[in-house]
Length: 228
Image (cartoon, rainbow, N blue to C red; front, side, top):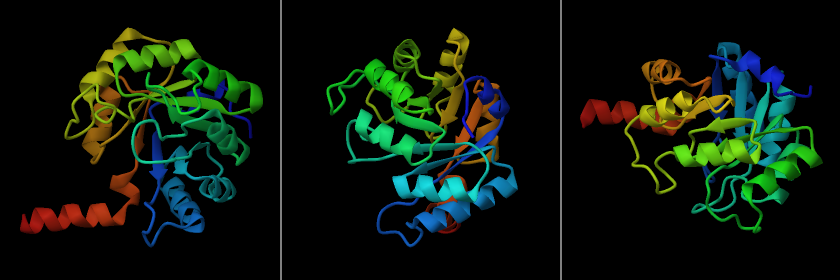
């Protein structure tokens, strides 16, 4: 299946589930990622977001919905699919959409975001999701040719404060500008109400990760509420 920009319309107002586990955790296994992804699809996920080449490969065989792939390399600065090499590897692993750092920060390989997006489009059939941290990032990402804009890095890139829940103010600002690309709400969406609020703020679709697929965090929330 090749996903086209026109094909993205099927994701409008839908839930995308991010299936990721951190290094050293029991669930950090590509086979487990694929199983969790398949379970999320049964529940209604219209697309899946996963990290790592093997995870992308296993998830592609486990689900029949679009897969957003990324490759985290490092922990600080630009580390979400930071270079064109990373991005093409994710595309070659089978991702329908490659998520890349969509901020205006310098990239490790010295390429601009536009050069990176152009390189992905030229070297694969994958679309590009720009993980942004601010309104200016979103504008620059659209100008660079990204196919989707995400608020993934709001509160993490140094331009905006980290909100307790999703950055609804940023969502509304980007949506109001009508930039012409699907706006994906992602980041700290921890409840069904948060997801509804994100759509109401203008999001095209909503990504939920931790609140659905990270048992350690969910358990900690319950324990904290009970004994905090």
